[in-house]
Structure formats: C-alpha cells, structure tokens
Image (cartoon, rainbow, N blue to C red; front, top):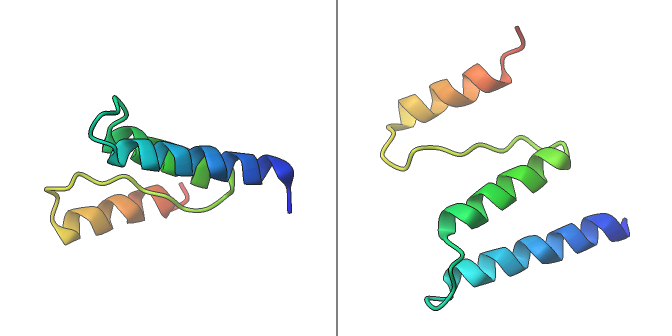
Length: 69
C-alpha cells in the first residue's frame, strides 16, 4: 500500500470525525470537499450535489461532467 495514500485516507477520516464533533469548527461541507478532492486525486469519479436538487438534476450534472467534449 502506498504510504501517501494511507496518510491521505487518515487525514480525510480525521476531517470526517471532526465534522461530526459539535465542538469542532470543521463542517460537513469541509469534510465533503476533502472527500471529493481526495477521490479526484485517486482518479475516482466524485461529485458534489446540491442537496435540494432533484434526482434528474443530479443525473444531468453527472452526465455533463463525465461526457468528453
């Protein structure tokens, strides 16, 4: 296992745990941004959707990002 990816995974887990702590200044949005960024670095498709968007809007956003120009 790549030590750098393991370290990044631990840092991401730490951000998620901090977001769950009501006494922390880390928000759920901070954790989400970290997860999306690390996923993209790893070459994994990752999306961040508006929680109020319809399933159709989310699907359209995913198609727009994954469709090569």
